Image (cartoon, rainbow, N blue to C red; front, side, top):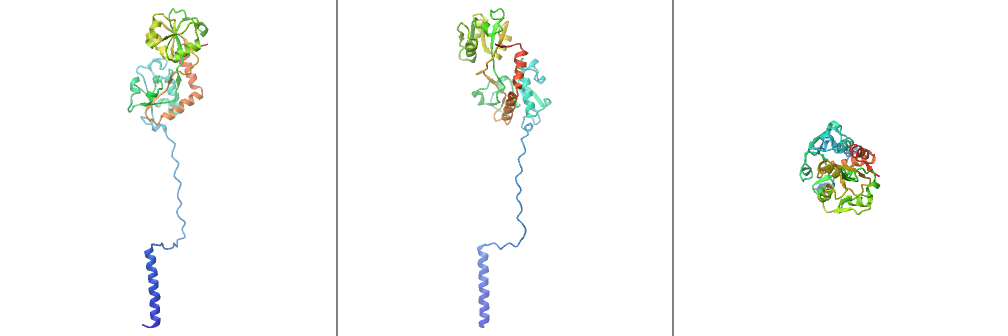
Length: 295
């Protein structure tokens, strides 16, 4: 082998070794492309939630009420008419949610069925449900649409039957149940000259009025409406007391974990802010049943 040939061989071998080492190292070959890397498009913004697709029957709002449903909450047992306080509030809420009146479907349930745990075949249930922590374990509640007023109930022929003001009630004998908002209202708002007669149960309270041992009792308005219509012959509601602080709050019942709970609550809060709830309360729970607010 000539010296020139040997030198060429050594150079070739060194070059081969370098190439081999490069291949084993996994180093990428330099890119000769002049193309720019592809642009990454931004993720599309989520579409706003369509409430109509979250309901029991998509496109419809199914509302349950009692069977039968009574005035003044539902007039003539026909909630679809929109007449009566709860029927009217229901349609106002439906409208805020984007449902036309024709898209509201009414069904019937018992009171107990509505607050029992488990799946429901409706979106909302409205039957004067007081919001309580115990019931919240089984179902959802909306924001309250009504805080119960306190009412003064008497009987036909009572010395207080013709009273139209709180001042006229002060000389009468008034009864209320222990530990209730009604008792507080009787003592603080009426403040009769005689001590309020206090009873341990609602049944005792009603019996004392029936037997005319007291001339009037203070109970929440829904109870007064029921007692006057069913329990007490000749029962007469003298009027409502203006302050509802601390009264029971009524809310719509929804299935536990419902996606509609927050939208329904927001709708009710909007109706309250706009004065719509107050107008409906005045129309259906004062004027239509002739139960004036006492002053």
